[in-house]
Image (cartoon, rainbow, N blue to C red; front, top):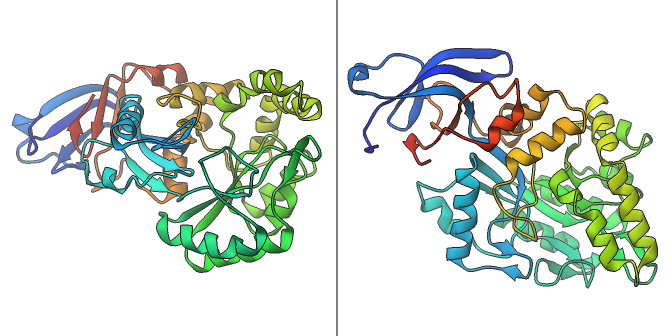
Length: 363
């Protein structure tokens, strides 16, 4: 498809959960619902169209051992793109991936800078590892480097207790979150445990990653404050294996991880039912493969979310939450076309018929 070509999408265009159009056009890389004068020469694509999918917790530039080189980062981004993910919220990476912004064939990335963790309380080579007295300075640094987000590690295993424990004192994190907000950035945190959550929400945090520790006591607090969760259920599926590997040394932690895993679906459904915003993220780029967004949406339906809500968690709702347009007049033409209606069976997301990025057919 040449750069100046017009694209005509015929079929069903899911502009929103309740708004369906019969066609759209792509002119100059942007969406229009008005028939252009050059319509006769348009390239026609048929099917069911959605806005480009969102992976709201992904790591480009990172693998299980730490930062990766540019060719590896490129392969990660292309894998996500080919799966239909055209917008990524990169929830922490030690690599500089700004060069991706210059590539018209790669997904857009919203960066949270590098993880900020407590000293020796996270995966080696991933994070800035600091103490509480330096938290505000590092949050300010990553707020300036990121794209409107900062990522904290809220809890991790404490070897002195043998279980998950909070990483930051309430006072330190409250001041740090206020500083991020002053600089125009939102703050999210990696959290598995129960006791970590209320202090972070009360300190003003905007989002929690994983959120396996949600309970009937903390879910109303999340709903009241509008704090979003990104459950990363494809990652939580690995908890039993992690527990098996660490049980000999940390039996309390292993038992805790298994319990969190066992109630994962109930946790997500209870949060959704209470009105907590839920978004789709895979946690790809650590030990997980890229390109798993369709699987994560299926997992959200297994947790009890209605199909349209699970779709919104990776399309309309996710884009609105991140401040990026969907399929609206004049918006960049980032969309994915499927054989059948994904509202009827979300598993269709695993097989895109066409991927259109910045108005170009790339897959």
